[in-house]
Length: 318
Image 1: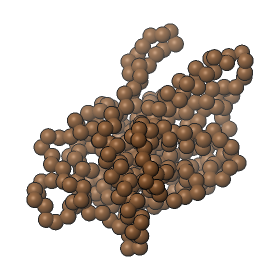
Image 2 (image 1 turned 90 degrees about the horizontal axis):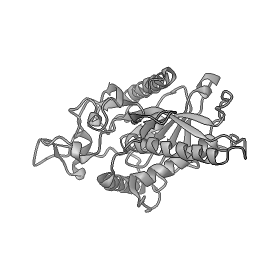
Image 3 (image 1 turned 120 degrees about the vertical axis):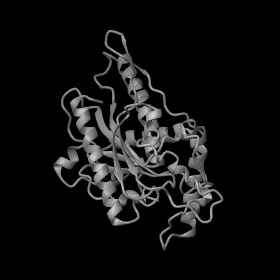
Image 4 (image 1 turned 30 degrees about the horizontal axis):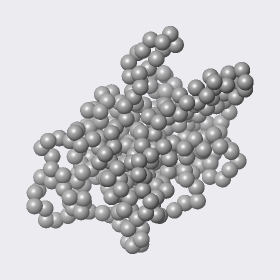
């Protein structure tokens, strides 16, 4: 699909853009990152992570956690790897004592926003392992532990996939009832790969348990309750996805619209307060990037979300 994964979608064009935390956008259920190329300048480095199984029939047998681990390793290689390699932005200089820290924002459309949550959870494990490694080698080396700071997540119409959270009255239509929007020049092999990725995404989400979060511990050993997930800015489509006609039950909706009646798309049932802001955008789940006007709306929402999350981090309100 692309030479590099992550793929640098938006190189920073100014020193200010270079200094801002990069945004890593994870692919949607179809496995691709083409839609993210429809975004206008977000004034920061923007990377897209596509599904490495897209062009093959391989699977993440470990489900969403295995997928997230793979993507976290790609992010680590990008942020801590050789600054001179192709397809990445040089790391800005940091203040003394924090040379090995890297800030970032996660996000993605649909599945990408959900997987971002799992990546954020695994970042805590990475940081803990790095700190433990540093403690064990204290006095033997001056090398500092690496650390990732996830400032937050920008979800683009990502709903809570936990079936226990689904409203009881909502009836879900068969996946084949959803109108797929293909471009006029989409090749048959592309359609096959995208549909295969969608099928795999549904399979993995079916047994994924949403992340649980460790207890926060102060320096004196006292606990202050669960750490909780990073803050989320949610872009929410206003409309339901149109279904193929005719439908036996007119009340059926696409699975993507199960939580459409909930302002937070079901995430309040997972963790109250996680969603810090909801930005409504015109259109339905599958046409947010299909014309310039809607894509520009999404651009403004993602840009606003990144800036809000960056501001919360600087204020220490994460």
